[in-house]
Image 1 (cartoon, rainbow, N blue to C red):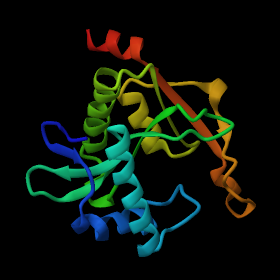
Image 2: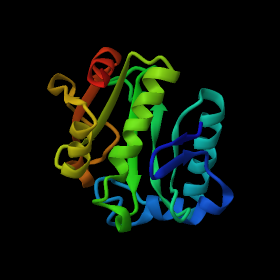
Image 3: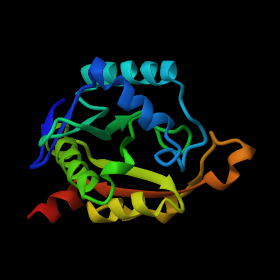
Image 4: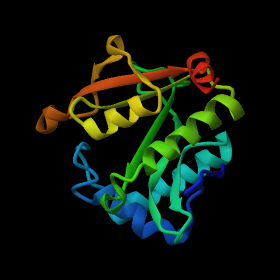
Length: 186
């Protein structure tokens, strides 16, 4: 999958992306709402898995590159995988992570809109969801900016977070249907 916006390119991962991908998975500021930090070897394994998923499904979390200088600034994309039993396997999630140097410039909203268009137009998806820790206000604001709506009945306590990080368990869920997305485009 390769998508382009006015300022960005979403593309598969390359070997030269590995240091930035590791930073996206280990930086304390970026990972504030995650109960883990990945080592370089763990990050490399995830990067390889994401590329396999892109090749197999036509999408996954992709490299987010700035056109003006080629800088790898983050990760954004659609991911199928579910979070059983809360979300079935066929559920498609949109997600992102951005290096702090690039926060506040609208990059995530721009990339996420392109991902929604790809999901609904090219992939024919019926719904796309997003979820984040209940007080991750930056991500929640992006969800609203791209047209997603809070689905309070689908909020949940994340089952994969142990007691040491119980403050990260409460998650808010947002969703957008193909119908609602198409109506917003008209």
